[in-house]
Image (cartoon, rainbow, N blue to C red; front, side, top):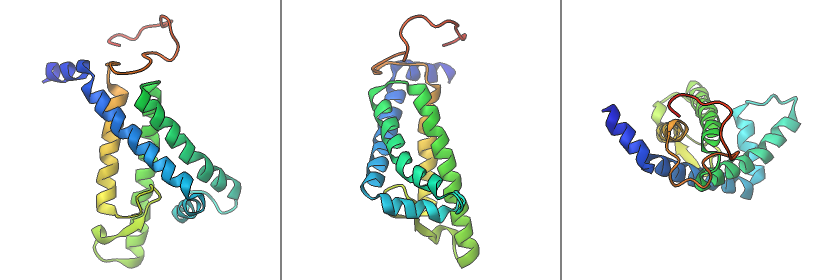
Length: 174
């Protein structure tokens, strides 16, 4: 089994598929937020992640996050700094997925009913979604970001290394 996974990774196809899906998703999400910054600001505020006493941080997050998502998406599509970008994307996805789950749990505590019937606009640019559809979607994106992060292949990438030349140290197996 390990040899099959290694051969698939060496082909570069799993990395390419992960990069294209993640890159396109993040560009789409970022553009949709840039188009409606006030609505995105309101949606971020509904998560209650940023204290009300720090409106400058809320505004900075609402302005900066969409451009960071677009930038990460472009880097992934181009195949530049794939591991670092994948790690950043993974961090955003884990934090966002946790926030979606916490918000859904709060709505469930207030309203009750079936958990999977909870529907709200998560701020990802796709409008209202059922929580039982959004969480698996995010878990798939998390899996793809792990594929991009852990892949040893750099086929179909624009730059193998961000800094050209030999590395000052070498990690076995990479």
